[in-house]
Picture 1: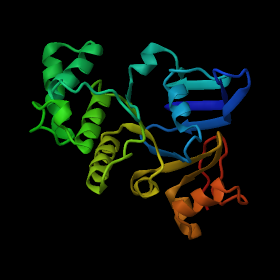
Picture 2: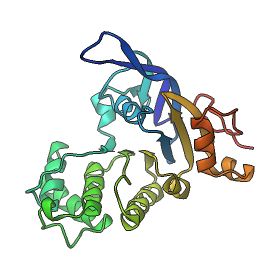
Picture 3: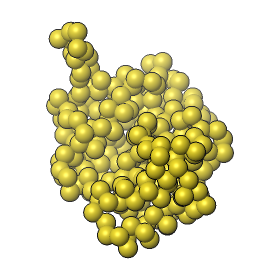
Length: 258
């Protein structure tokens, strides 16, 4: 059973000044397997964040089906098994790192002893064990991203969803986030993240999906891209420009390989 499954999903929006529909997603079908790291790449405005919101049951499709752990994505019980880091999370400047994580642990109903253990463990995992007593307003961009990742893990989720987790980070910060994602994979977790930083995607992903103007243009394993003597950047540019089909094409979200 896939962790996440989208079947022929269409999603539109209307502007406040018009009754005209603007289609964000057009017939998107995609499945994410247990234990994989899946990179969701696409141009700005392609629909990546909308897809994530649908996957988490935060918004609903016009038509199509979205399943999380085999259930409707809107069900609360399914979402309890998910950790989420949005692209622009709201962080409480005057809370310390420890207080911030404890607050989120309380939202999941964790007991005091469990919260203390979880907060200590997470701060160590994201490299902030010596910064947990500092207020978030004193954190660097990279530190804020790491505390955001720790927040996404506070409920010990089976499925971790990250929206542009490397955005705005310097090379050291991006390396730290990559290491955390690889650690999650080693622990048997499933990771789905959106990004436009292709080099990071090539380093850590089992599969990648390319979204262009609301349509899934390709799903590929990195093994299927490399033998064809093309980089992920080659695939991205060709598909984004509407070039002829590549060796790795979408077929219900399953990868093709040579």
